[in-house]
Length: 272
Image 1 (tube, helix red, strand yellow):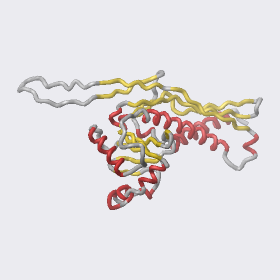
Image 2 (cartoon, one colour; image 1 turned 90 degrees about the vertical axis):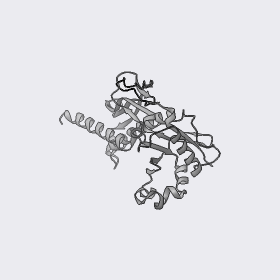
Image 3 (tube, rainbow, N blue to C red; image 1 turned 180 degrees about the vertical axis):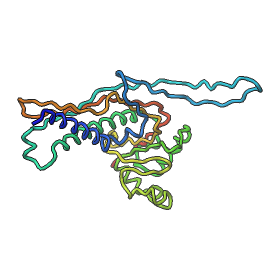
Image 4 (tube, rainbow, N blue to C red; image 1 turned 135 degrees about the vertical axis):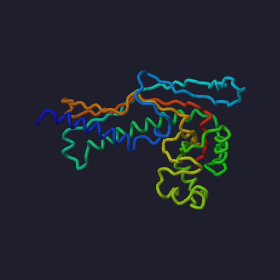
């Protein structure tokens, strides 16, 4: 047998892990500012303040806005997800063990990516409504008003992430589910993964933080949160003769930070 077979196996496995991570690993990575190929243990996202327009005298100098630039540091950490694949086990099963392990590792790293982002969202103290009820139309509109009052751009880059309990409560709001309000193309029944409402992409997520019986849901603009990657998902496969098995190690280096708290509103929802 050619000695290149092992290398072909490894390359195929790495590709499968990467594809699985891209396909179903993380739900939130694409919804925030992302910086890839970071060199070093941290990187910086720039928070730019608001500019003010003013007049000038004829032939005078154009006034300078003097925008405030505040650097926000994002620290990266290394994460691993590994498992053993016994060589003879692959002869005794009717499933593709390689694909199973590849998906499991990619999903684990994807959940970690979302966890990093959610941990930063949880630092928000910009609350809409009380924490004594669930997801209601009143609470949604209160958050909508807070975003508008903070001049958060309504440019199609707003994202709202809620728990599955809150998603089912949203399905009880006529304005969320009725074609009379949102049009036939935006009905949630077409797929429970996400839908657009109030100029925002709404999506359910099982990993949102629960404190006591209160679920922390978040409505934010893409530019308010940053995610940095020093090394995307990589896979290392090594043969251990004493175990007659391959050890499959998936790893990545990533971090997240809250760039602008004014672009984030948290909805605390009671889960009974």
